[in-house]
Length: 428
Image (cartoon, rainbow, N blue to C red; front, side, top):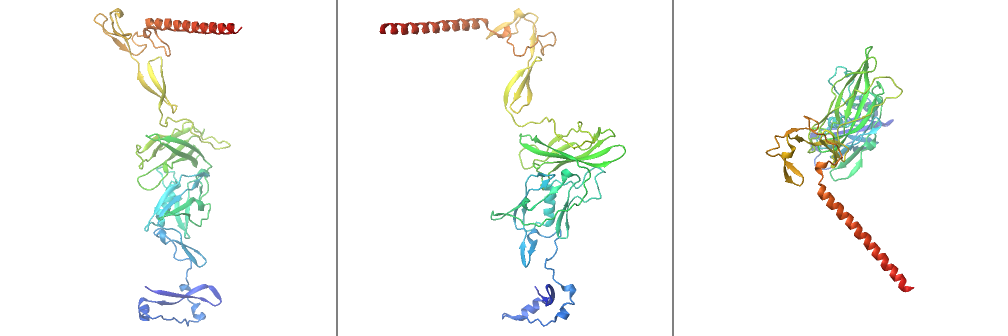
């Protein structure tokens, strides 16, 4: 333990230089009684100690600095910027707000941990399998002059926007406050191509909706064609470690006429480690309708997908081929079953088993099974009631009953009318 004593110059009140360093031995020599230290060093000597001038900002931060040790200064007031708790971060990318992510700050959390957390939350792609990925640019976060600097991927759609309101810190007592971080924004990398973006919703195995955003940007062009990079991000991504939102990236190659030649890594994988859904959720992106033609504006949209939310069976239809198709509340249709038909050599030999049902008998011959329209079998007419499915006797009985009930009701009305007429006649 030591005590360093600094003093400013009489003609420079803001410049402080080291006067004396009291070691632990010096402090022990003072004993228990208070001791006054007398500074007798003249300014002429003190001003020569340039190398011993105090840095009022304190030690500069590095990647291994603990977050709880990071301080900010306002005049002579020093404030700890972070404390143990949960840090919620909601940034913006391409003018659209990103999903909120949480980072648990402990006593051993470092500045490098914060940089990794922000890189993953903002969906910055640092490396890619393709050789065309720019190797001269260090995408991601770094420390420059004790400030955090983030270089996003190329393209206007990938431009980052971080302000003070993006950070909310909840301490161990549950108190939530806005962190007063000092940010400055600079253009760290030139935009190479405007690019475009599209947002859509996919569903995991439990029908949970997940937002996915795909951005594209021109990465390289030659006399033979162009290469566009796509980046897919999802706030619903739940990796085993970290909070990464990048779920896919690849290269879209076009020829001299703007037609798609190939797409690398067109499969998107969304991890679902923190939910009971199947993980990962895999789906492919179909870029076959995309072109590299020069237009006034860049557009990208999701026109069709084969995924649906959870739904219940609302109705069903029977097609002419005998397929039973269910129509669900989410707009999807699924095959529920297939009608089979049977043909017998002697229909008169069928045995009646009741309720207008027949079964093969000794004299009917073997059943020839198949789908409707096959092997000389009959066809199915959707929505129609066939004679074989109608009990004529029961229908006649119901018709007679209905007719009798109608006549009975009509006679009741007639009788009531006659009673009313008699009542009126009595009054007259």
